[in-house]
Each structure stands twice: as structure tokens, then as C-alpha cells.
Image (tube, rainbow, N blue to C red):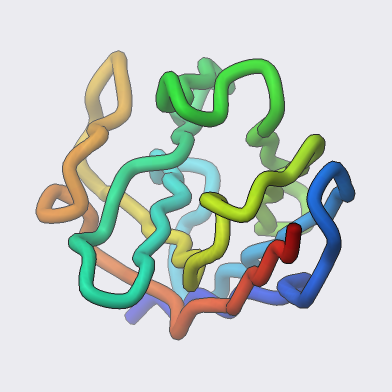
Length: 125
């Protein structure tokens, strides 16, 4: 069983930065595609960014150029560097792990097998 634990959330003013971390245990981290999703109150969970097991990265249009996903297989950790934060980025951020091998990681939450508990990010104007 894979456990994922997110950290690094918090409150920041618009234009600020945060770095989220997601530490994995109990599985073979290097073989999983990893994704970051977010969910605002009253909204569905939406794709933010993903990284394949070979290191290919993909991000949503809404965060492209501002957010960067990366992974450190030696530390079993995936990161989300968030710059130029906007109030609309406010949400609970979740990391997910996808065991299925695909060249391009999925942008659909339903494709991910394991999830962390989430970390709150609040951006004030």
C-alpha cells in the first residue's frame, strides 16, 4: 500500500510563492507517474500538473509558466513549485500516484490509484 503525505501549504499574498512536497512510502515510487490536483470549495478536483516516471512534465493552461512540477526518486518525493500565485489558486492541493504506465501521465483524477490527504493553499489579494 502506498502512502502519500503532502506538506508545504499555507497562506500567502498574491504574487508570492510556495513549494509543495509529497513524500511517498510503501511502493516503488520511481515507477509511478505523479500528479498534483486541486479542489476549491464547491468545485471538482482539477488537474494542475503531472510528471511521468521518465521525468516528462505536463501542466494545465491555468498554471503554465507559474508552476513547476519535479521529482526526486532518491527521496521518493514530488514537488510543486508555485510562483506568481493568484487568489484563484486557493484550494486544497492533492498529490496522486498512478501505477499504470503511460507515455503521457493522465490529467484525469480517476486514473490515479493513490492520494494524499491534501494541503491547503490560500492566496489573498
